[in-house]
Length: 97
Image (tube, rainbow, N blue to C red):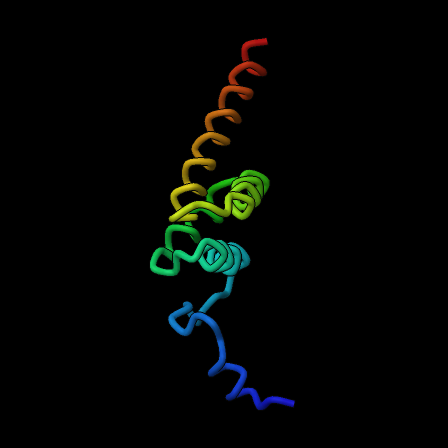
């Protein structure tokens, strides 16, 4: 069995924020690390706080399946923009009826 100090030393991202107290913060860190964009933790925390989780999960799933991307973060943001515009168009149609 490993000691706690050894397990902490082996963590993949040592620059990860340490004081995560809310669920959206943890999810934002998960997004940043999944997309290999750890320099923008705060952006993903903001997205996790403000946007619907279903849209974020769908964009992340699309990005993970897009293996030939140079920058997964760019693909994620593009897909997120597409999903948000589709959601707003659907909402506009519902309000018009």
